[in-house]
Each structure stands twice: as structure tokens, then as C-alpha cells.
Image 1 (cartoon, rainbow, N blue to C red):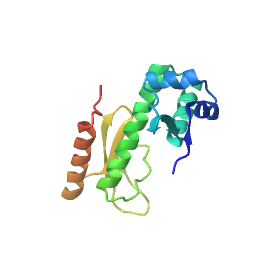
Image 2 (cartoon, rainbow, N blue to C red):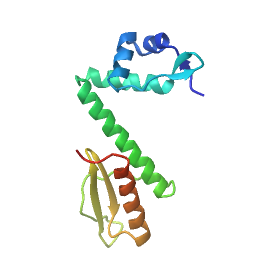
Image 3 (cartoon, one colour):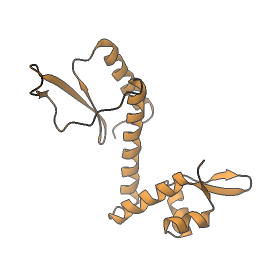
Image 4 (cartoon, rainbow, N blue to C red):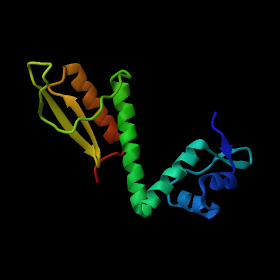
Length: 153
């Protein structure tokens, strides 16, 4: 179970002011508190999000830039979760640094990879041609991604 914090405890733990926490919530950078009874409570998830916001702000990003970065990170995490579910929880391979024909010394044939850009910095990469079953899974994952409002702007 996550540890819970009052607003004051959360701000102190993150090293920010109470007004900064409230500002981040107003600006949509941080989710509001989880309420238990009459008291607003925050969790470790809020603390981690606050620390990430502070890290991005420390890099010089303004609110709009932080929002964009957090959206891209959320979209990337969503794609990973969706792909893992569609692939029956098989681990997702590390991305490769190029697209096209990739040959190795261990095999006598070349693999062809296809990259599809979904949004922003979110792409999927898969061996092509895929089996009909895998292509159907990939198509469902892409449709699911776009149906959740993750379309390129």
C-alpha cells in the first residue's frame, strides 16, 4: 500500500512549496489528491510525479513544455502496456537504432523491420511481414492507441 501524505508533508518531501503543489494541480501537471474521509491525501505516485515535474523544470522547461513531455511519456507508457497485453505479456525488445534490412552473422537471411510512427516520439517496430495473427494484434493496438485520444496533433 502506498504511503499517504498531507499536502504539507508532500510539499516538504518533494522540496517544493505548498503553493507550487497547488499550482501544478491547477495547471494539470499533477493529479489532485485522493480523498479519504474529510482529508485530502496524496500518495507516492504524487510524490514521484512532483519529482519528475521538478526535474523537467530544472532542465529549463516551462509549464507547456512539461505538459508536452509528460503527455509523451504517458503515451509511450500506454503503448508499452498495450503492446505487452497484445503480445500476451511477452517482454518488449529493446528498440533498434535503424529500420530496414538488418542482417547478423548468425543467420544467413536478412530480417525486414517495419516502423510505424503513432504520435510524437511514440513508434512501434516489428518484423515484417508479420503473421496474420500478429498483424491483427498490431492493427488492434494501433486502433486502441488512437481511440484513446493519442492522435498526432
